Image 1: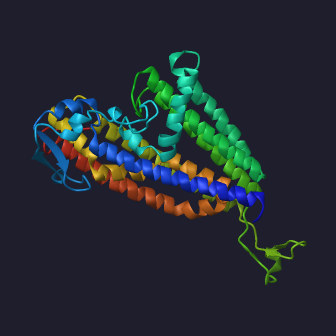
Image 2 (image 1 turned 180 degrees about the vertical axis):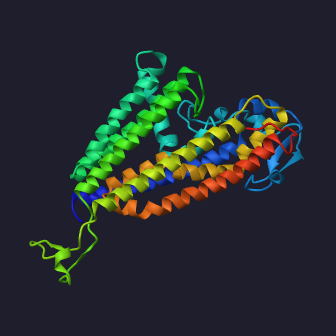
Image 3 (image 1 turned 135 degrees about the vertical axis):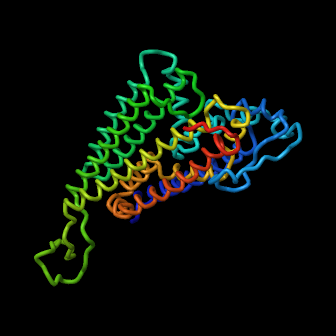
Length: 385
């Protein structure tokens, strides 16, 4: 391909590459921030003690992965720079690294590093969280209609309209971040956290589900109306009945993919999204309860901080960053934008389930070790979650 379209494609590919580099750079900074600075304000007071807990193994798979070690009364780095916000040059209103939470660590890169700061800027300009006219639930209901419009565009035969649909759905993703930010701001909650059990939590989940359904319906309609073909050949067919011929090019195409195969691919990807969403929300809820619970003893608190800083926990969170439902939707939208939808669905049809099951298995083993470490073995506390 030559001409303007080729130049635009090169520019977009370059931007995508730079975005990936930015995400990796931010992940590295997040890891450094977690290791070098207190995660919660309570830790600053506890650092005046004489004992901390450090992980000795990369994975917190058992209570033996942690040991206690004596340290000096004062830690120079943590005492001189009491909080991360004291040293960062970006305001914590916009800096996604300031408030370290379970959900923030498991959130996909685009939402954490791009849409969340943009939602803060939008709220600061419009003042949604300071008024009662536009509520978080109203924003949630509105982005359902944006998703329906996006699904309608994705179903179009025109690649240009489908790309507009991709942009619309990403705008819906931004609105999804905005409703969460406004809800937390109204309740004076810092950082990314799920208010599990509240009406807004369930309304947001339902609206997100409806948005995904609208997008997948658009994907199905497009593939049904434009079924991909099983390749082509310049040779004459041995069984000409099963093929169609383009009289202008003289190229003989193989038969089209049937609607049944389209349904199978779309249903498989919908199942992957459902499995990912279920697992992701489950681990956010459980880890959030274990690691951010405040009604704990000082020893348990130090155990919580030790798990937060462990490489194993960071690795589990990073896996969910890549394979949570939001990230999978980003991958789907990218395939639509690049006009590689069918190839993407065919590639991930079974690999997606296998990958998610492996991640869930690893997370379950890690979860059992963490629960045992914080609330049972080393503390003598039989608190169950």
